[in-house]
Length: 354
Image (cartoon, rainbow, N blue to C red):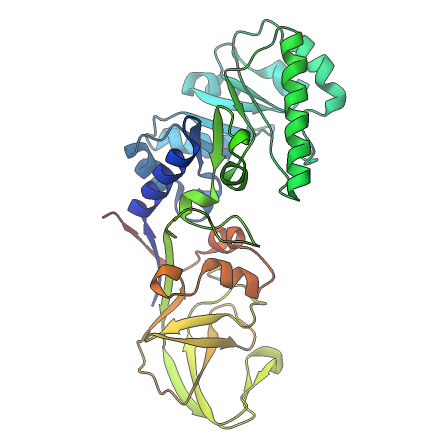
């Protein structure tokens, strides 16, 4: 009745395409937030088969879950709360992204650490006001491995300014005898847009899943969306003109038509405020109408009396003529990142590996 299919072969193919593009830089595949809704352990296992350079997650719990599942590839996490077991990190070989002096104090010997600096995003990382003190403190640290930051993706000018800041930090560190083995600044968007932002490694998340990080332009390389979300028509009925649809009657039929009921709602991650999204049924696009409910949404089929049980493609691959995660996100004033990460609920998950 509801299904989310994940193409693991597509994920491996996307990763290898990004690796070829960014060579000789390494490519860390980011699998945080349950691999952007695609299944963290399943995706990490598939990427490990492809010889992934490293895996990135947000927090320590995600990193330990991967180790518990048997993942042996390098793993790095960078949102460190009070729950971090620094001794376990050392024993499990989990690399840590360090953003505060307090975290630096707690790191155990033998832990590979990456220092995060704030080059303009204003989130995690050491402020430029602390760089002098930071690099004085790091001098002679044998476990020091990487320096990294994150772009705001505000504009090309803003990105270039952040790269200038990153270079300033590197120069200051070197002046104090601090050198880094791995420098990484770019995520998918930056890695694709700026070859000179790739340094020693890039961190690719959304691109690994075949999705476009840009809201204003097409991808310059071919990636394959790995997630396809479908449901079935479970009710089709003829209604008169002026029929109100769903809560608040945000939509009324302009003429007598058929309405189709799809058992996929915001309980499964379908945005409640989605408007003007179109789903694919029997090779034709139909509009989602009225307010999306917890368990269901309605499609205006016009004069088409489609059979109950017909497949409804909520999103998939544009190459196959299907609606996309980008289109669903746009219909709700959001982005593809949020759409795929929220998808789930009662939908059945199927993993394909061609």
